[in-house]
Image (cartoon, rainbow, N blue to C red; front, side, top):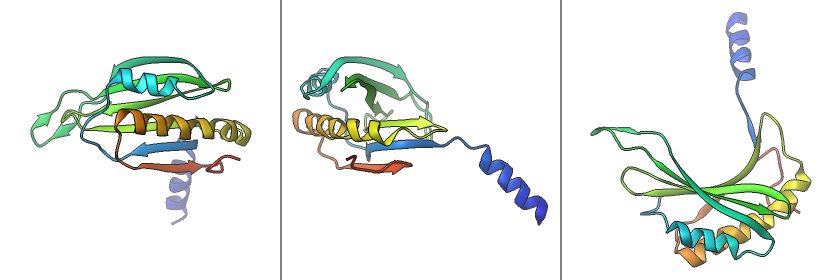
Length: 150
C-alpha cells in the first residue's frame, strides 16, 4: 500500500499545471473568416499589434481512419502592454472551436496581470461574437487566479 501511495505521489508531482484564465466554446458549425476576426480584435480599445498566423494541428483518428490535420488560426495581440492570443481550431469536418486564454505553465500569473487583461479579453470575445457571427456560448475556467479580474 505504501509503495502505491509513493507511486501516485511521484506521478502527481510530475504533471505540468497551467494556471490562468481560459475562455472557450463547444464546437460550432464553422469558424468565422480570419479577416473578420482580425478586424474585430483590432476594434477593441487598448488593443495593439494584432497579427494572424495559422498552423497545422493534430490528425484525429476516427472510425474512417486518420483524418486531415486540424487547422489552428491564431490571432496575436497586445492589450495594455500584455501580449496574448486567441485561436480557432478548424477540425476535419469543418466544425471549429474557439479558445482565448492567458496562463503560465508550472507557475501562476500575477493577479494584477489578470486584472489588467481580463476586461480586454471580454471585450475581444464580445467583438468577435457580435462582428463575426459566433453564436455559441463562451465558457470560462480559472486556475490559481480569481476569475473576473478586479
